[in-house]
Image (tube, rainbow, N blue to C red; front, side):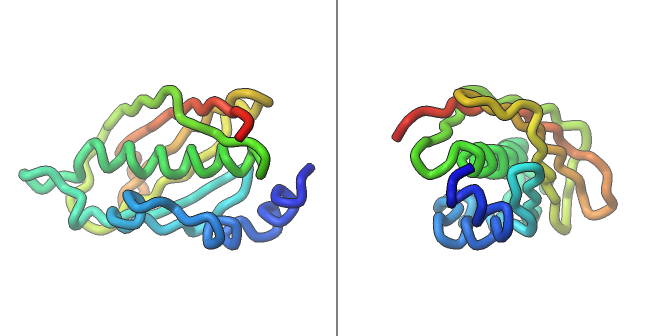
Length: 141
């Protein structure tokens, strides 16, 4: 286990503060609330991320999912390696129109060269709105 992994297991939120979330996640109002190798959680407001008809944009769900899954994959990869997305898919089953949505990211596979994460996104009432799966390839920096 690397020193970065040890620190992240104790305080993954500090790892995010040092690394940053990226400009897109910040513009969309994504806020991480929990971050470990086994579980990452973030919220995103519906307001400002909607389609013209007032529904949360399907792409916004995917941005939330990719932000969670890619950050989790990079935490797993460690400081000498880089995780990059190679596949993502989403199934939207409900539309959020107000409030916030919460994404919960859990690993399906944590390998040496590849990770797979599932992200369940729910609305304020805890109803699942979208299920996202992301695959990241891990490579040397």
